Each structure stands twice: as structure tokens, then as C-alpha cells.
Amino acid sequence: MKNKVNFAIIGFGSIAKTHAVSAYMANLNYNLSYNLNLKTIVTRSPLESLINGVKNTLNVEEVLEDKEIDFIDICTPNSSHLEIIQKAVGYNKAIYCEKPLASNLKDAKEAEELVRNSHIKNAVALNYRFLPAVRLIRNEIKKGTIGDIIDFKIKLYHKSYLNQNKKASWRTERSSGGGALMDLGVHLIDTVNFTLGEIKEIDSDTRIFFKERTNVDEIANCNLYLQNGVKGSLEVSRIFAEKNEPTTYVVYGTKGSIKMSSSKPYTIEIYDYEEDMTKILGPKGAGEILSYYPSERNSMGFFYDSHGASLVNFANIIKGFEDNGITPTFKDALKAQNIIHRCYNK
Image 1 (cartoon, rainbow, N blue to C red):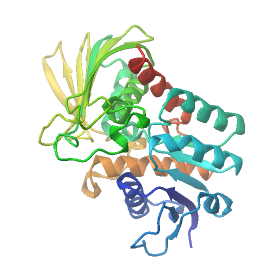
Image 2 (cartoon, rainbow, N blue to C red):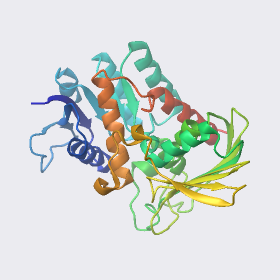
Image 3 (cartoon, rainbow, N blue to C red):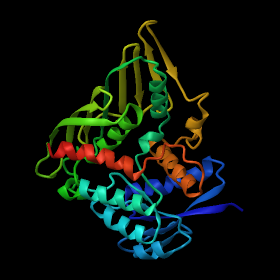
Image 4 (tube, rainbow, N blue to C red):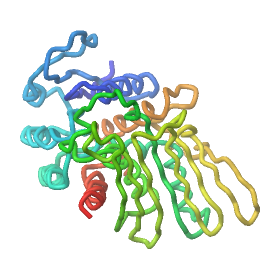
């Protein structure tokens, strides 16, 4: 019988349910040497219906005191992250945290310092890193496939707050730390850091359309300046409507371009300028990319697939397996949050 990597989810909103489903599917999809086991869920009030075999508690300390729980998974509103992290560090408990790391830069710095000084294993759900297409772009950039980088454009549109009748929530309040740029743009900032090099400077224009409902940005347009001299742009919105809402990323170089879309997360499109040819590149031959990412046949969509890959990679670290350098840490999340802070405080 397989041993277990037990974890507890703190908070049980929609993203927590995504984590729970992704962990369950990971056990089915991969030949793991352990069972990634959701043992306990922490909520503010008792769950009306409980997942079979999973305990519900209202007390965070109960899961922190449980020596069988290997890590906690924080899925609460942004403003509550630091307090939970402080408690977890006190119990020397490993931490997996939803993005962003905190609702403000000060708290994010404290969270990163706490886990670093206490040598706590940590990760943040910046799950775009695990898309095969993102990994392929990173590989091709390293190879110099499209020559010197001239520019890049990355964008993510959601229509989740376009409905005028949608009620305000903690995500629309200033206490969340920000709007579209904080909620969605953090993924894009980390993706650029991961694939092209770290962002040095940023300037932005943020806007609110539904002013009667929200106090944080619904649209953000940013110019990014990387440490290596490359420049590009980022655009994100929670009120732009497209049928499939793909995240798109294009990198332009002196020898051509590379494109990806989250609607086709397994492949990238490479255009060779000199040959005037386009080819589609998948992960075949780069087996490590699909080590803990399902085949297309078993895919539940990139959102669930990438969250599952992120959780498995962290569970591997918990088990003492060699870190592949992909899992985003608190340090990585702090870098992204620092960029967002500059946008909001320019």
C-alpha cells in the first residue's frame, strides 16, 4: 500500500475546490510513489456536505498540530495569508499558498522572510509555469531559436466581472490588494520572469469601468522592461469578453517568432523568418515537460491540469525528491508582487 503525502486546505471557495479536484486527478493520472491525500478542510462554518474521508474543522491550529499533515494549502482571501503563514511557521509546517502571496508588498516580504529564515518548504500556485507551452517557450528561448529577442506581448482576458448584476466581493475591495493586475496579472508577470528573464521596471495604466461596484482595477495595460534590456507589453482584464478567454503569449525575435495560447496548451507555433515557414512544436522528445502533466487524452483543461502539476511538484519536494527548479517559491511570488506594487504606487 502506498504511503501518503497528507495536506489540509484552508478555506474552501472555488479555487480550493480546484485544488482538491486537481490533487485527486493527479493520483489517477500519474504513477506516484505516494497518495496525494486531502486529509482536512478548514472552513469558517461547518460544511453542509463533506468529501468522503475528509475531515472538516473550524480551527487552523488543529491542522497545524496534526503531525500527519505534511503541508497546508492556503486558499483564503489575500489579506489573510500572512496571518496563516505566521502560524504555520510557528509549527514548522510546509506551506503551499494561492497567489498572490499577500495583499500588499510589506506582508509579502514578511512572509518570504519567515519561510526563508525558518527553512520552511514553500510554494505558490503560479501554475502557468507548468503549461507545456510555457515550458516549450522557455526551452526555445534558451536555445536561441528565434535569435535575439526584440519584443513580447502577453495578455489574459476574463469576463468574470462583466455581468453588471454580479455582486461585489472581497476581490473588488481594496483590502484584496488590487484587481485584475493582482489577481490575473501576477501569472503573466511570473511567466515573463520564468521564460525571458526578470523584469526590472514597469509602467502601467489601470482603469475601472464599473465604478459603482469595484474599488480596484478591472483593466491594466503595462510596459515591461527586463534586466537583459528586452522590452514588451502586458494586458489583463476581468471585464473583456471573448468566447474562449485564452491567455496568449507572443515573443518576437530577429529570426522569427514564437506563439502560444492556453486554448492549445500542449504546443507552440514557431515562425522561421528566413525560411518563411511555420511549424508546430509539441513536448515529444522533451519528456520532463509531461512528467506530471497529463496527456491530451486525459486532460481536464489547462486550469485543472496545471494546478495538479503544481501540487504534485510541491509534494515531490515534501517527499525529498530532487527539486527540478520549476516549482515557484515565495521568493518568486515576491518578485512578481514587487512589480505589481510599483504599478499601483507609481
